[in-house]
Image (cartoon, rainbow, N blue to C red; front, side):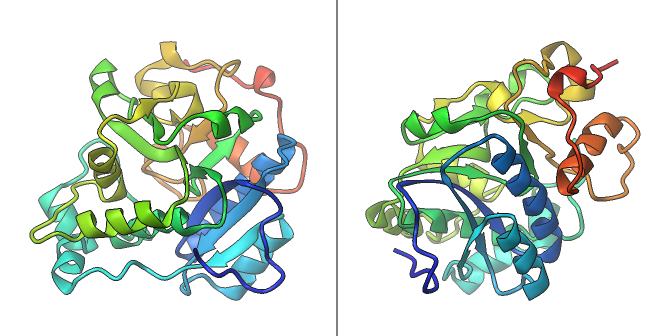
Length: 276
């Protein structure tokens, strides 16, 4: 298991975990942490972070209740690293439905697997660009491995999972098995950790889409959007702290994220506008 700094022992057996690998994602994690705290959860809030995250960003996350756990990138081969470098990966597997931000570094995504080294019995992983709008502690009682389908354009997306939210059971044996499969000769994981995890857990259990509601549903599938049912909102592709071409279409969601990032009041989901 990962050795956390002295004085940062787990408080229990369950934890919400996110990964932060740069200052931008630390900004996202700050909003996520506040959203989790406002749900009243008693689970630990854990931020795995690499050395690339500035101290001042980490201090803000700690102030918002995070247990900070430093992690290294995985010990992958030079060939693996070259295949999954940003320019080469996006050249071989371009994104056609949305735009990844410039601070997105695909190789960093694999550090997510280090959660299987954590000293907890049960974990719910959340990408740093998510918000938890309602208490989601029931997810801890789901088995490993559960994730929601990658639905944001049509029902055809149901065959793929999205790794922004999933349930896991930390285990050294599982982590070692993952490393052995991850960097096999010629390995190429088209969507990094997402493709790998779907391959490693081929019988993954499906969570409701409301446990990982992707922001593009807002304008692509508005009939699926339900503030009354959404528990976790996920800002896939463009991030709410960026200036980007879809910002006007996503303005209500961006305003909600900014409310969580700040220290002021947060609107109740019932008071939020509905898709056009």
